[in-house]
Each structure stands twice: as structure tokens, then as C-alpha cells.
Length: 277
Image 1 (cartoon, one colour):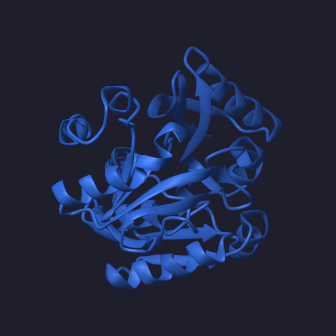
Image 2 (cartoon, rainbow, N blue to C red):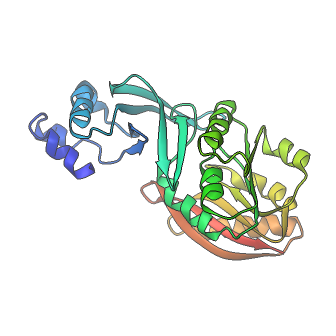
Image 3 (cartoon, rainbow, N blue to C red):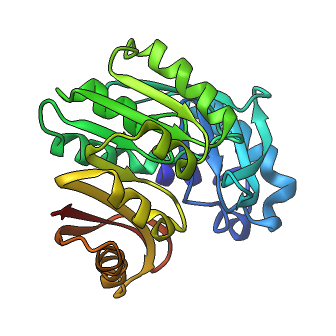
């Protein structure tokens, strides 16, 4: 699709502008989102958007990001440049349906393979906790595709939590997923339960919650810690884990540290899987 877009535009834009057409975008449900749309193409955005709609019939709305992820809930500011005037859609991945408003909820379709990877690690009868649950993509994928006992999800964004509640009903997973609205630092002590596996899919600052996570993981339980790091600095994720374990007087074993997404050139999302003893 990315290569063909320029092909469809070659008779509509001069070569100088054609070279500026973004090759990077995300598709969430039937919405296409340009994360980095050049200012030089502002006057041509409707032509570009309309061309996409004419040639890719599964796309109904074209958006461009006008402000990057910001604020307490790490959500973007988006503008409709073509198609239906809406920002709500239903995305399908890994055998689940995920309804969300792409401007009000943090969600990355690029993490689909990572969500599948985690689900494949979950063992039968596990109790799983997803911190920073969002509209419940991890919770849904795990509950739908594994024989886990239960999945708990905690989210601070009320809008994301509302969609999560809708999504567990849409996917008929009410009996496997339990959702909580609030700050994990307040909610986890109230739940007062230990888990076999804890996920920490926070886009930024996850290390500030490692001490809390270590209190609620079972002996020999597994934690998935996410971080953003530059190429060649992935070891820093392991250092953060080891430092937190040392402070909490816990022993840990790093199982794997992997690259699971690219945020920008040379800057990656990394996951450190580790076992706690």
C-alpha cells in the first residue's frame, strides 16, 4: 500500500511534491493516520486523502497528526483531511475486535505482533495483570487466545476504560477479564492479589512502577517491562530491572530483551522479560 500510494498520485502531484508524500502511516480499523505529514503538502492534503479513498475502499477516514502524543493520557491531536468526519473505529487483530476513538485513546496497531508474542508465552491457568490497560488490547488478545485463568486490567483514562468495558462485551470475555479504573498505585493495593504474569506496556516512565509491580508478582512469576531506548542502549532496560529488584530485595533473571517496535529512526520500543524469585 505504501509503495502504491505514490503510483496513484504520480499524475496528480509534481515530482517535487510526490517525493514528500509520507511513506509512514498507521491503519486502525478503517481509519488511516499520517503521523508526520509535511507542511509543504498542506494544500494538497485533500487530493492525497481523496486518492487513498478512491483506491483503498477499506479506508473510510484519513487523519493527520497535528500534535504528537502528550498530556496525562499520552493521546495525539488529529485532524480529518478526507472521508467520514469521525475518529471512532473498530480494529481487528489477533482474533479480537477493538473499538476505540483514535484521538482519545492511546493505541498502536504496530504492537499487534508483540501482543501475539506475549499471548503465546501465557501458560494455562495463569492469573495475568495488565497495567496501563488502555482500551484493553493486551487483555483481549490474552483472554481470547490462551487458557489463562483470568486477566485483570487497570487504566487511568476514563475514556479508554469505557471502551475497554465495551470491548470485553463485544468479544464475549466478561467471564475472563476484570477491569479497574484508576491509578495503578492506588488500585493495586486495593486488589491486593499476586499474579503469575504482569505486563507494563507504558509508553514512557515504566521504571517508576517497577517497585510496585514487584510487590504483586508471585514467586517465579514473570514481568514484561517496556521502555524506549536508542539502538545500542537496550542493556539499560535490564539495568533498570536489576536496580529495582535490588532495592526491593528480590532476585531476578532476565529471560529475554527484545526490540518490539520502532518509534523513530534509531529509537525503539524494547521489552525486557524477567522472572522474579
